[in-house]
Amino acid sequence: MRIFDPHIHMTSRTTDDYQAMYDAGVRAVTEPAFWLGQPRTSVGSFRDYFDGLVGWERFRAAQFGITHHCTVALNPKEANDPRLAGVLDLLPRYLAKDGVVAVGETGFDAMTEAEETVFVRHLGLAAEHGLPVLVHTPHRDKVEGTRRSLELVAGSGLPPGMVLIDHLNEVTVGQVAEAGCWMGFSIYPDTKMDEHRMVKVLSEYGLDRMIVNSAADWGRSDPLKTLKTGRAMLDAGFGEDDVDRVLWRNPVEFYAQSGRLLLDDAQAADPTATWEGNSVLRGQRPV
Amino acid sequence: MTTPAAAARLAELVTRVTEHPNQLPTLFPAVARLVGRGPTDPADRDGLLTLRVEDDARVTLLAAAAGSGRLDTNQLAALLTELYEEGDGDERRAVLRALDRLDAVDPRVGRRLVEDALRSNDPRLIAAAMGRFAARHLGADAWRHGVLKCLFVGVPLAAVTDWADRVDSELVRMTADFTAEREAAGRTVPEDARRILAAPRPDPGPEPSEDPEHPQAREGER
Image (spheres, chains in turn brown, purple):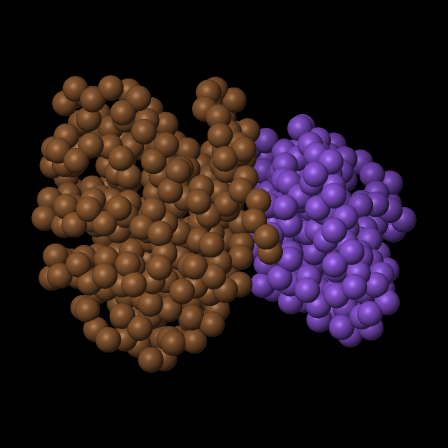
């Protein structure tokens, strides 16, 4: 089983996790920029964090045969802190870099005006840089937060296929399927979704535009939930190719729209890999 | 590795940068996407000894900017600093490689970038930092620590330009200590450490075995 974990916060994880992920078949990840579990207080903290995402963390992952990508944004929680407004001015230079495959995580936390303003700015930056967007949906008031997120996406003029709405569940997936955006599911030990509920959603909605991630971070979470979901799919009667589609080809297709994927390196590091796709991953775009 | 189309794109970029060197910060991150990336020597995947395709292209562009006649020394220094400080690992590596090729760089500026890279733990940056520029301009202390760092993180000594010309008794002492520490821990000693210990040096100094502060140096002199 080859796995692309499209949402995992590796800066919070250990080298044992990297090794276990590699052993489980994980060959690529995307690490969305998010908060630290406690608020930052200055723009400089973000600069160092973003530098780490495109520098040290990428190197750390490569040591374990895993290609590391990231997304950058001012996350919804910290979008509410006026001291951090300057983070938006930092973003363009990171959005030009290889391996930065989307704008995100953006979206809503507490559905404030400040969050909405920053969210809209992010949608504009994505259009400007030709990048997809990773949208975090709130833990509280999720249905309304998802509805308003889709409204803003529609208003932005971005094609729905360039947008991934994440942390969905049984009650929010329907409206995203209808909108034509990609549908992301974070599989957690005891919150959000579990792998068996996920399999039911896949049975009901099909595999198109379906993305599964572990969203593992500094909290109680499990970086192998992607593998466990793949196994649950096989147990439920899905085929190997279905699993490959959900756990590899779908996230590759979504993030390849950036033209910034680095997957050729991972392939070179894994001589047993049989997959192809270099050309699709090397989108040439004007600068 | 590089297709004719990619070579044509590089040529276009060179023209642009020669005419407008101030566009380089915008172009620099996109170079690998436009020109290509990957090792030029399959045996040197990380580009520790050779320039990778994207390194070579970025160095070419920096050389074009430096040779454009449109930047004075201060402006060139500011450009290199900006590209390094705002770069990801790949971009930083290319700036370090370019230092080896640009004679017009103020050595104080280049040294600051090289010393920053040597504080990192990324072998690709450390290897790129120990090239021709470091051989010529890095102070003795920083250079010795750079060599020792190479031994620590597995950068081959062959990546250190002209290392044999700069070996001195202090580097031999440091290497002997490193070797003794590795042996005490039952760990492998890199062959490169033995090469340093065996290298002729201009200031042989006291035999390490005579130094009571460093009795373990005897190990290294075997």
